Length: 418
Image (tube, rainbow, N blue to C red; front, side, top):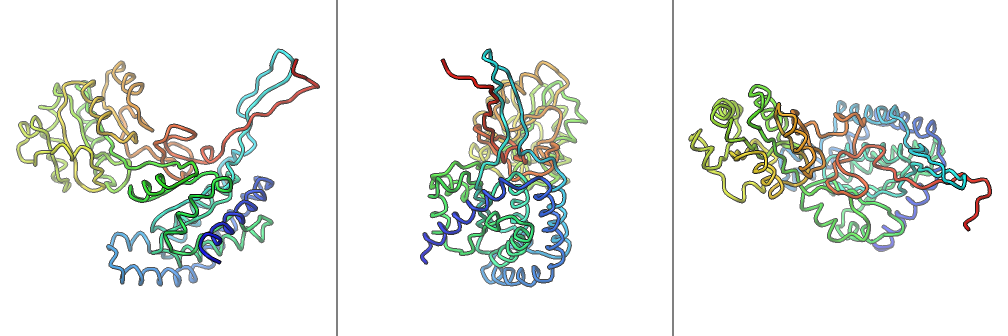
């Protein structure tokens, strides 16, 4: 069987799995997730053994220590993976929810019902925990999942999927509901992206290069975000202490995430008071600072920012700082350089806060809060499969509801069209 036939066979298997899941009750799905969690812990030794093969391969390939750390499975991480499955089992099931009903003049009732999307393809890199996370969310929302992880984690992913499929089958769910493309060839991804009519949605998780490759080659709708160039704007009416804590958290708490601040914008009306203490705090925390000419005039001990710096997603302890004339100037900067991911204003001025919420076009816009809060768990969704900066179907953190769509339902009593 060549790669094209192999991928097609896997996709058809997932399609059968989707039909099986569409018939599954909430209780059946929840029981399967809880038993999957228990099976992962029971077979932890097997997972660690397979994971060692991937770590050895990654070391020979010269992957960075950070990448190898993301790849590594140990008892603690397996327990966390299992706990994630249990937590998804405890979330409300969105499938079958009727979100709205209204009566027409002819007496019929029209409504919308949440239903599974169908078959979702997840293309991702490195972290094997994504295999379990994506499976749990897709399964709970009634979707079959086709998983295609990176070659560096193939043994770990194959072992995890094997355990999950065993449990699905034992619980009366077609094991095609959890399908894995277990060949490392890049051609397998290209073939997967051609399966419109079988696969309903593709979600890539990884770096900008992966996401652009998927988007440029897919015949299937793709939910994505290319990068997170996030901003915090400190307004002239900000509380300085609050602004300092928010900006520090947005950059330093976990700089390698897509919702970390990459550029801090400061109103010139507060810059002289705010910047000296703020920039010293950043420097003391090891943040490399790049400033506009006005910033370096206030705080000379930093490098000058170049035009291209404002487009960068650093994912590191590096920060651009720019002094702006006012909120309009800040919003113009965000519109030009931002990535429509997460942007925040710190202000005690209600009118400006409301304008910022209305006019900044990002997946999450925050007032007096850190950009790091743009996250499914933090928003109360329970879990997320990723953050979308698209505008159609889903935008922002994607939880269970975002892994469903709606269909119209009609309740009649013999109505005909005149």
